Image 1 (cartoon, rainbow, N blue to C red):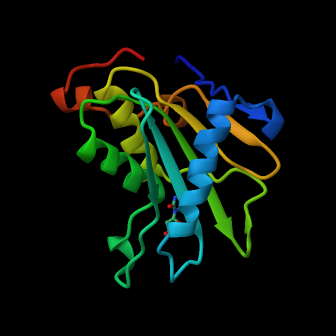
Image 2 (cartoon, rainbow, N blue to C red):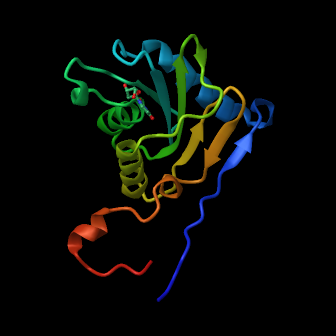
Image 3 (cartoon, protein in one colour):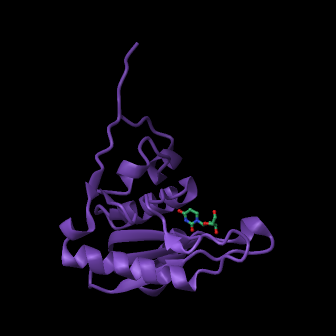
Length: 165
Ligand code: THU
């Protein structure tokens, strides 16, 4: 028997400790919550993807009366970036959520499906994508999408080979 542990490093920042660039990206994610179409959950999520050339692509959750047809903010932003700027690696993704008249005090964690798409984005461009999660009390930073989805299913698995972990 062999046992192993996968660690995740999370940095927690007070707003004033963040760089101006990260504050700008988080502000873009916060602004996108205003465009959220969420008449069912009233949970407004905004995301902002920072591309290598400095472009910021925003996204927000898009709900639907047929509930599963909707899409989260993270995937809306990443798919928009991939569709409009396919040659630009995504360097960072910021996420914020607004509900009951205020931004959440603690960061909101991306759902599993979004993590899977975040990971594929990172792998596609062969470079880490930093993830910033906004909370009014603190902001969490992850160095990569992989750190949010360890032991994941990736394109290499489709080839069926044995992967050394
Ligand atoms: N949602 C996101 O957009 N991102 C997340 O990380 C969590 C959940 C959306 C999906 C749905 O429109 C609403 O929030 C409630 O789940």
